[in-house]
Image (tube, rainbow, N blue to C red; front, top):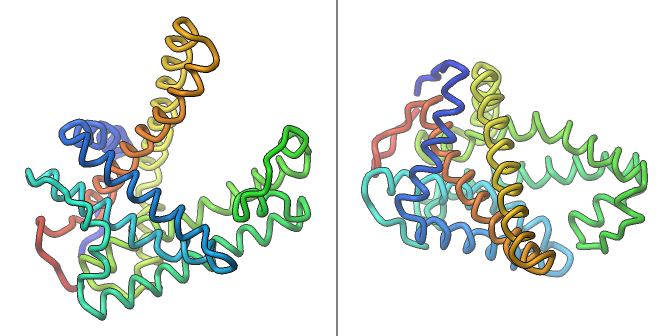
Length: 262
């Protein structure tokens, strides 16, 4: 395993490759992403432990999307079962991925717990328990502060988990060590990731503006509401498709279908 440091402009390449690969097989990637969302949503509905279970499988599900992208770049059609790849890679890798998922869930819940110190738990209830999101709640100063605090705390957390599922799966690196390597990779390539996230923000804003302009001209608010959400989900699917390329450039992932030990 070798850590690469790439130029800042590579972040824009990751965005382009994600969009290009998505449109190479749009039906496959749309299906995978909606299945991914359905899987997480169904688990979150389980009483008491639902939120934890949904967070627990997120690294494994994200890995499935990365492997699906890997297969598409090799000219294959990614099947829905690719989302379960983490649970079919042997008992040792499966346990490591579940441990990583547990660490992710605990880290995320810790972030939510810290936001309760700011707004008394309103943001956490909306995010984790589907509490009603009323205009009064959104406009509250403490709720907005909780959003900013969660964003600030989530940045270092996402750095630790960005590459970790791939390192566990393709290189067999233990969960905690994979989190450390992931954080180092993000920090060493901070310029590329900054360009990557800014570029995606620009893509989302531009697409939303286009959708709002066209739908408002044709049918008003009802058509806008009907088109905006599917459009956002489509853009999210493209974003997740691009994640593979950011990981691949930082760590030189093995060729499709192979696995490498650290």
